[in-house]
Image (cartoon, rainbow, N blue to C red; front, side):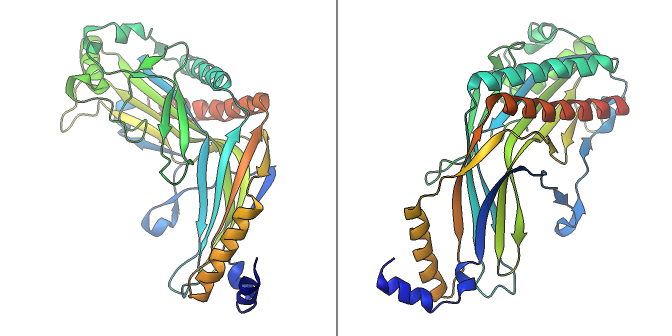
Length: 342
């Protein structure tokens, strides 16, 4: 830091340059609870149900799609602000990446999660038909399929953070359809190529129900605080099923029909198994440039920010144990709800 910058720093109250703080901890943290309702004042239900009648009386099931996605990088953030901030707010940002887990490990996790899901359904009295009964039917002809593993890249030009990959179980194969709502930005096809068209026809022909399942497994979370003038971010490891969905359909939809429904996780389901060591990968040069930018922002009456990059060095076997632990809990929670609605 040059002498001019040092003098500028002395003119600024210290609390303005530390208005945002980012740190990490190796211990497992709890998944952050989601809120909803007016102004986010209520806690979201553990499982949300859309069209309960679609699950009533269901006996024969075909698993039309099953996918497990894995976050590989993400951005975590707390932002100070509010009507009392007076421009002295700022953002605390953690950029996190996963290291040490191979595609083979992710594939193995997806395979076992699918196997355990089928076992959970049969243990509750459902008859799980071979998937070929659906995919080899005339109803399925022309349905659009996607290649897996499927990379879902939500990063931008200025950041590589926000990448995940979805895996198809080996029991299903490297191609399967994508149902609406499973992967952000993917509609799954238009008209006759959309899998729900096949689901409707197959239901009419056989009376069986087709379900589609998707899980998104996350590896990092954060605690902290976001006030009017100060924010903090505590980055930590937490293996969780961040998104979980079971869709169901049989027969054609109409204004008053209840043939199509879904269950979604309203709250993430986490594991208490530790699986990684966290490294602060922010260089001293990057931290110095950030401090300089904060000095000038504070001099102009603006907020100050802090960004830190973290690498999660995972033990692949412990990672797999933690992921399967969380996925097992999600399987049980969602299939229990299915059975309850039957």
